[in-house]
Length: 180
Image (cartoon, rainbow, N blue to C red; front, top):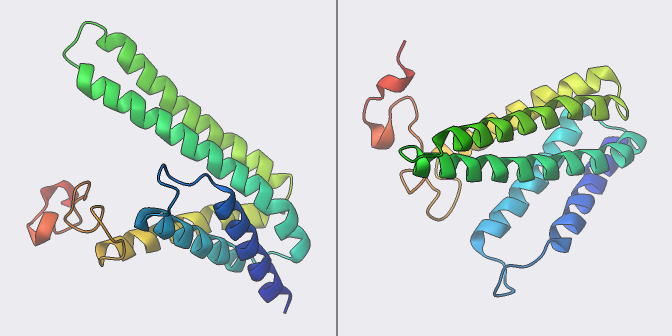
């Protein structure tokens, strides 16, 4: 019963956070926003279940986790922008500065990951912090599996723009990138 209450509390928290996010320019939600919200709700339920959080743990953990997720998202955007600038300017005169910016952005992202462990240890027992690391990876792998099965609508789906090869490559063609 406590587990069910914790899962429902976590889902309610994510729902409130998701609806508090700003709407897109037209004021309506697009399929990608709905998909992200669905994945976030699934992630909350999955992590709550994997960690077997008590109600008290969930109340202290989720605000910290959500803050770390926001920091991760911001760091990822900075890394992506630095990568784009580097890829566009690799032949230019200031490639050294662009490379430094990219590496510094990556270091900042890694720092967030390291600091998040200390933050989690402050609100959870160490065993649950370890389970969290495993649960995040397990959830990520599940989501990648869903994407490979056509789980995401729109251009990011299998074979669309931004698609990445799997062991068989794009559209089933052999991929030597994953060969031993």
